[in-house]
Image (cartoon, rainbow, N blue to C red; front, side, top):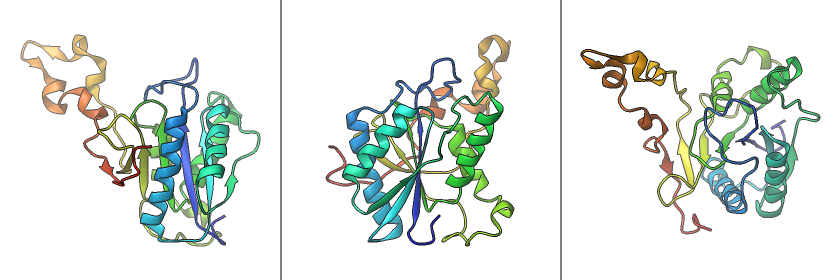
Length: 224
């Protein structure tokens, strides 16, 4: 892992029936346009972060097999320099089971050792709790003491692929955690005679889902 060539990581949050869709993915797999944007964004961001490297590997984690398979296929076809796609075998996608929890943590730990981290929530610019866990684990390195050191200290560069923010599709993103807000309980809980205190303190809830903290990686070929 990462000794011969850099490893970049991709996490795709796709819609699962019956699962917690707090970030509201809209489909079980990215569509053709999103996958094309993914390949373009990944190629340009790797050059931006790592320079003109001859080869790299990608580790893919996703909440559905369809999303994982589609992303692997498109990257192998359209991402120059990609040497191999790395996947955990026989991953248990039911995160409510013991095996599913273990597999999710294993994926997060591997992502925390990547050189660049890409995330895609299908159909939205939404956040991903899993992605933020992976970022946090970047600083919990005791478990990896026997491995080669990270190429760079601090948070891994984060990128988001989305068509929901302005005219671009590839954005550099902060690694910070979106904390829970009491405003999510709604006005029945937070509204009192003096008004909605939570709204006054935290601002409008919609601001948590906007694109203001994303920085476009501009390119003439950004729109495919």
